[in-house]
Amino acid sequence: MANELIRHKLAILPDQPGCYLMKDRQNTVIYVGKAKVLKNRVRSYFTGSHDTKTQRLVNEIEDFEYIITSSDKEALILELNLIKKYDPKYNIMLKDDKSYPYLKITGERHPKLITTRQVKKDKGKYFGPYPNAYAAAETKKLLDRLYPLRKCHTMPDRVCLYYHLGQCLAPCVKPVEKETYQEMIDGITKFLNGGFREVKVQLVAKMSEAAENLEFERAKEYRDQINMIETVMEKQKMAMNDFTNRDVFAYAVDKGWMCVQVFFVRQGKLIERDVSLFPLYRDPEEEFLTYLGQFYEKANHVKPNEILIPEADDPDMLKEWLGVRVLVPQRGKKKELVALAKKNAEVAIKEKFQLLERQEERTIGACTDLGEAMNIEVPLRIEAFDNSHIQGADAVSAMITFIDGKPSKKDYRKYKTRNASKPDDYAAMREVIRRRYSRVLKDGLPLPDLIVIDGGKGQMESAREILEDELGLSIPIAGLAKDAKHQTSQLLYGSPAEIVPLKRTSEAFYLLQRIQDEVHRFVITFHRQLRGKNSIQSALDGLEGVGPKRKQQLLKHFGSVKKIKEASVEQIQEAGMPEALAISIEQHFKQGTLPSES
Image (cartoon, rainbow, N blue to C red; front, top):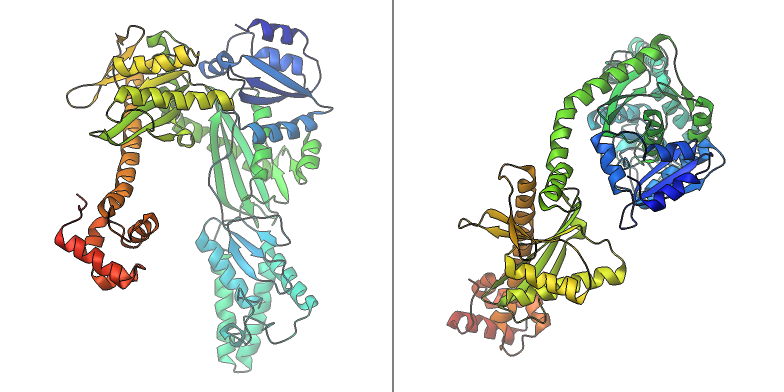
C-alpha cells in the first residue's frame, strides 16, 4: 500500500511526458523511468497486481519525484542522464566489460592503421567490430600490404624495414602530401565497405601483367594478396546482398525478464552478436529504448549506417536522436534478420531463466526469507562485524556490507582498535560500532536494515548499548554463534537474545553462512597484513641506527624478516644501508639477539 505522502502526490500528477525517480526509506533513488503520460505511468506502480520482482520494487518505494519534459524524446534523453547520475539499483546498467576489436585510421598528420578495443571521440576513423582479434589482425595485415601507411609509433630518423617491403612511404625522411594519405584512407574505407572485390580484380590484372613480363616475384606477391582477400574477406556466408553496415536488434520477454539480442552486420556479413538479459519493470518497448540509448553511449560500440529494430512508435524521432537511419522492416531479408534475432533472444532467455531464478532465490529471496523469520522489514542492506587479535596483540575489527544478498566490496571497512583494552572483545565492539555509525550519521550515509555481529549475546548487547543508548538509532541487531567445528550454528535476535529457528538447508541460512565466512575472511586478512607489517618493526626495535624509514626500506627490499635474517652484509648494503649498520644488522640476526619471524 502507498503511504499518505505518495497518495497525495499521485492525486496531483500531471498528464504530461517526463521522468520519475522512485526513492526508498533512505531517500536513495532506486529506480528512474520515463513516461509519455506521467499520471498514468506512476499510478500504475501503486494499483493492480504485479509479479514478485516488481512488487519488491514497489515495496521499497517511500517517495518519488518527477520532472516534466516537453516531448517524449526529451524524456528519453533525461532518463539516460538520470540513470547515469544516480546509478539506481533497479535500472538496467550496461556495465559489462564486453568489447570488440576495431580497425582504426588515426587522425594524425601521418596516419597509422591500428587495431583497438577503445573507441574514442577523436579524429580517427573506426571500422568494425570484428568477430575476434585474429580476424581484425588478419584484415590489418592485408591492408598493410595494400596501403603503405606508417607503422611506427614514434617517427624514427631513418627508414625502416617496412619501407623496403613497400609497406610504408617513409614519412620520417621523405615528404608525403596530404592528398596521398587521403587517397589511401579513401581506398581503405572503400575496401572495408565492400570494395575489396574491385581491388581483387585489379590485383588479378596486375598479377597477369607481372607474369607476362617475367616478374615472377612480383606476380607471387599479387597472388598472395589475392589469396588473402579470398581468405579474410570472402570466407563468410553473405547475410545481405548489399554492403551496408547495420546493427539488428530484437528482444524477447518472459516472466518479468527481458533479453535483447544484437546482430552486427558488416560488409553484408553477420559477424558477431551481443546478448543482454535483465529484469523488466515497465513496458517492454520503453525499456528497449532505454537499452538502445545506453548501448550506443558505451565507448566500445560504433554506430553503423543503419539500425533495424522490431517496432517503434516514431522511428524518425529515433533517427534524429541517434543520428543514424532507423528502420522497422516490414518484409524481405531485413525482416528475416530481425526475426532471427528475436528467435535467438527467445532461446537465450529460456536457457538462462532457470539460472537467474536460482540466483535471485539465493540473494534477494534469501533476504526476504530472513526478514520473515526475524519478523523485521526485508534486510536488503546488511552490515556485519568481526574482531581479530592474538592474545590482545594487533587488535583489529572489520565490517562488510551485503546489498540485495550480494557482497558490496566498495562498502567494506577496516578498523584498528584504538581505545579499548586490547583483549576485551566487548569494548572493541563498542568502539567500532560507535566509530562506524557516528560517521554514518555525520556524513548522511545509508543506514543498514540489519546489523550482524559475529558473536553471541555479550557482543550483541555491546553493540545495542552504543546504537540505542548513545546514538539513538533503532536498527535490528543479530548475532551469529558457531558450533564446535567453527561453523555457523545459530542466529540470535531480540532483547534478551533468543535463537531464531532457521532450517540449515534454507537460503536464508546459506546467506548468513556466506556473510559470516566473508567477514571472518576479511578481518583475518587485515590482521595478517597488520601483523606482517608490525613484525619487521618489532624485530628491529632497539637496534641503533634503524628508525621507521629504514625499517620500511628493509622490508620493501627483502619482503620479510626471514630474508633479512638470511641476508649477507653486501645484500643488506644493496638495500641502502651504510656498511657499518649492515654489519651490525647481520651480526645481531646471526647471534640471535633479535626475534625472528615465526
